[in-house]
Image 1 (tube, chains in turn purple, orange):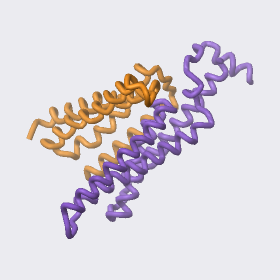
Image 2 (cartoon, chains in turn purple, cyan):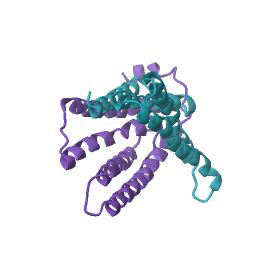
Image 3 (cartoon, chains in turn brown, green):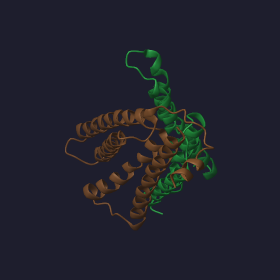
Length: 148
Length: 117
């Protein structure tokens, strides 16, 4: 069985990637970084939405929420960059679509927006996609290990 | 109002161009050192691309209906994957392509639901 697996991958070119480019225990750290980033970005979008709501002192409320949103965006961007430094684009970028999921839940909770069947389908597609991309990374690193 | 095909082209241009943002970001971050100003170049290019890619989108949204355009923004994830294979040499296997297809489908559906079709 093991021999078959090796023979199957003999034709593959030797990997030119560095160790940090492969799937490793550091993946959990990257996933945490991306998760924090998506949560911050979705909170920023909620602040931008809140900036437009009415209040007793419209201007100061608007500018406060706008600044809060921009600050959240900036911190989120740094988490995103830290993750992207450690992991490839094909992994990190699709993972960022999780922010759409958090925005859907947050806007349901804060603004009473209805989670429709379409939105539920979208959320399940995004989760399935991220799972497949994770599996894809595992498969590749296994192939690289056998060829190395 | 501008013709709808022009609005669609503007959104597609925004996606094809904006998808270069993460590629330059990755290129910049690979060699990034806080003390070396030279390594900031690709990151600055990336931020510039992220910013300016919004211009055609805003222009299209200003003059055309949101409902048709918003789901199309999901396509930018496909361009990003193609660029990272082409310019960064990332290996994309069948699982990853399927995963990208699923996430794009998800963002597309979010776009549809936000647009209220």
